[in-house]
Length: 108
Image (cartoon, rainbow, N blue to C red; front, side):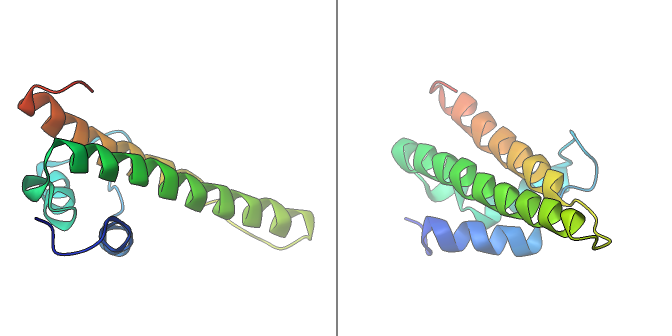
């Protein structure tokens, strides 16, 4: 049984985790993701639910960040597009969750 809602776990992870290298999840990063999302405490359905929530929420954060960047650029504001960071983080988190699903013998 988990100690926080999926949404709160994902928010906490957002505050604590950003990939150090694109496309690579270190053991340390995987451990942090595993612990914050309490992956070991989740049954198979809960594991799929948190995966789906990660995709949905990180997708929304990506869209909002990208829209803000494009709006700033249109208005002549010097801005840096940070939206790809959300996709990198989402990909890493999904990788860790899918690996757990694979270890349990459930489909990915």
